[in-house]
Image (cartoon, rainbow, N blue to C red; front, side, top):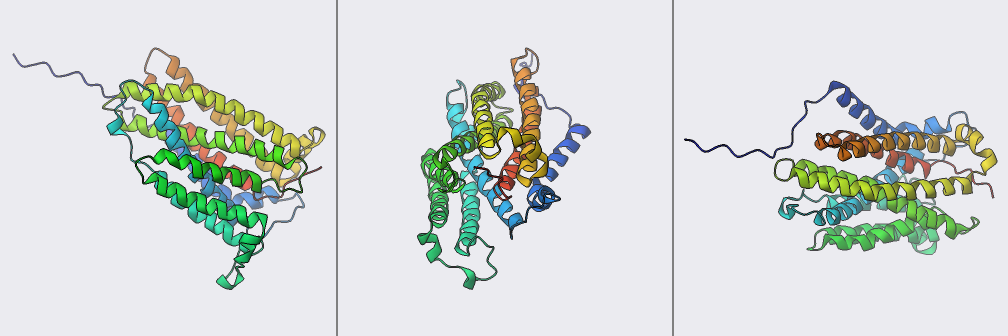
Length: 334
């Protein structure tokens, strides 16, 4: 009598839905168009002047933020996976950390070139004043970001890629200090809020991306371990979301006095971009809750992958909107 075939542990695959595919395409197109059309749309009718090179700066900062998310989230999610019993360590997805770091280096180098030209997009090499990078605060911070990504790329190729956390932390600190110059009242408070906000955002978006890659990689070999990693990530992500919300609210109130928030959300480029970011984050939160609900269910918990995938794509749009926020005029009222 022939031996019974071994039971398959392959996670069920769902037939792609046309509606889901269209939603994914819309989100991807939205994220891609933000750096290109976002500045003009945000500034239209506000009376605020558009700074030269706003679109290019938005693209560079979007790449820089995305690079932080990918590499930092990869380190974060790898540590979560090690805490799950039965996780196959030899079946981890191929690391994207080094590629992300080099992309971040290219973006940081482009931003440094803009600083070297007096915060204007250079048209030729003769426009660059390298001395400005060493003699000004913005220049030194730009150099710190460039060197930080180089160090992170080298760390990603070592036996301990988690050491990239240190240079990436230096990049985040530099970005937080850059966003709040000393002339601003309570600049250190603002830098601290940005530091927490950017760190938690990178862990949230980048961590989810790597967890979904783990789920896909372990779909046949260890599907239950993949679901366990997603559940563990979901618990940490709830804390990250709370920190992001709190720091975002305080940062908004620092730049928009409570009595002017409603008007500035529609009458300033910064307010419009912030409003768009809040709406997308709200959609992300709904997708996250849907995924968590399926994880807690007793049925097909693999179904949590679908809303989680939509969540990470929507987070890409949040990253692009965050980059746009750094490029439009800030309505600071001290």
